[in-house]
Structure formats: structure tokens, C-alpha cells
Length: 373
Image (tube, rainbow, N blue to C red; front, side, top):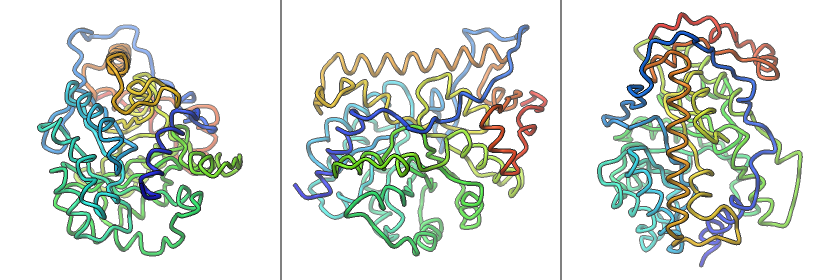
């Protein structure tokens, strides 16, 4: 097993062993406005959303963090089955290993095989040449291509990349040549308003903020080396702040008919926090840790790629709870569908409000919405 394959296994074990954080995702400072006289039927609340020419039963993306070794093929298989059963999107981890070694392609291809009609995202790094990126898309018959930005993780890796000068130019090339929608995503340090504007200028039309507060790849890489660097592990933009900055960048730079789509990810744990992210302007919510921990038993000692029925039951239970919480949030804000929620007043308070004030992002943009979809 080469160093990259071993790193993939280490990522899973450390993701199970480490708590999220140390930064909060920031959603404790987001409040939805209660509607004491709703005009909705809870049983008729519709969570479904259109996405890339298909329809999802709810705005959820299972963000895989693994792939590239035969030992985790079964993990991706089970995540794909979970996504297929529930009609939600699923993404694979970086396909770099399979692009180098065709023998590893099954560990990714299994996601499409188990989810033939669903929304599946391919995943490459920002140094990937266009022809290899297209190969990654073809490998999965993917509906979209994630390009992950992870400079902090790279610097935390002894074997990581150190030269980021060509990322922007390569992303622009991918935008021009990719046959499916391109999603540029951070992996846990967040997207700032300035970075979002630069991505928009490159032609990117879907941004996954990947904020701080969830799976911490800097901490994971440091633990692989037996290190702990608290200041480095606390680096990044909390997800709620990153989401607000990115929404404001999109709102202030683009016409109504040309607005980029935003995905919120980074420590979102349940339907309650997902509802806040959706209300703030996300079209989809990406979650990696919770379903993975459900499937694998929640601890490194319980790590078993093939898992068991209890793991599948736990992951399905988490999905059911997520769905119910999202329905409750829609009903209590007087929303019959996700588009309604995205137009209801949303209050950004506390440390998040302080952050936005300093950054010149008006919290009143969310607080004083008319409520009309």
C-alpha cells in the first residue's frame, strides 16, 4: 500500500477519533424567525429541490471523505446505497489515486454502480489537468465535479503540496472545458468574500464554502505525524461566517439571472443547523462526519469497512432525524417548501454579527427579508 492509500485509511480512523472543531461552526448565532400563525400543513411540507437536472428528496449532499484504496470500497458502497435509498446527493473523495492507478477505480465507481440514477459528484484537486479531470467525471458518469481547495491541509502534511500558484489558472481551464457543473469547495477552512469573488471572476458558478467547525483535516494530518498544534488546528473561517460572506459576494456581484449556487458544509450536524444554512442562502447542505460515523460505529476501535446492519440502521436513523428536523423548521417558519424558507427573515447575532460588521456584510440583508418566495 503506497503512502496515499495509507493516508486515506488514516483519514477515516482520525475522523472517527477526533471531535469536530476546535472552532464552532457559528450556527449557534443564527436564529430563524418563529411564525406563531403558520398557514402550512406539516404533512405536506415539501423538502424536494431540483439539482443538476434531477430532483433530490431534500437538499442534502453526503460528502464522502474516502476512496483510493480497495479496503474502503465497501464504505463508499454503503454511503452510495444510503444516498440512493433516500434520494440525496453523494460525492466521492479525491480521485487522484484512481487517476494514477486504474486498479483502484472500483473504490470510486462503486458509488455510481450502487446509485445509478442519483446525483453523484466526482472530486479532484486544483492541480488536476483538464484531461484527467474529465477522466474522473467519466469514471463515475458524474453529474458534477468537485474541485477541492485545501491549502491548510497540504501545509499540515509532511508530503503535501507547497506551490499553489497555478490553482486559479487551472480552475479557469476546468470551467471552460468541464462538461458538467464545476463545484469549487474548501475542505474545512472556509471561503472568504474575497475568494468567492475571485472564483466568480474565474467563471465558477457553484461554491461549497467548506467552513471550519467540522471534520478538521489539519488536525487529522498533524495526528498522523504524532503532532498537536492548537493554533494551526484553529485556523479557518467558521462555516456560518463563510456562508454569509459567500452569499454576500454572490448577491453583490451578479445579476439575478446569473447567480452562483452555494453549498454549505463544515460541521453541520443535523436538520436544525441545515435549516439555518438553507435560510441564509445555501441551496444544498453537505455533511460528511455524521453518516460516516453512523455507518462505522462512531469510534476508531469499531472501524470496519464492511460494517454491519446496526451501522446501516444508525446511518438511516440519522437521515430520518435530519429530514424530520428540517420539516419542523419549515413548518415553524411558515414555509411549505425550501424556497419559502430561503426568503424568511433570519437573524445573525452575537459573534457572527460582530464578524460581519467588521467585514462590511450587512446582517439586515437576512433580518429584513419580506418572506415572499
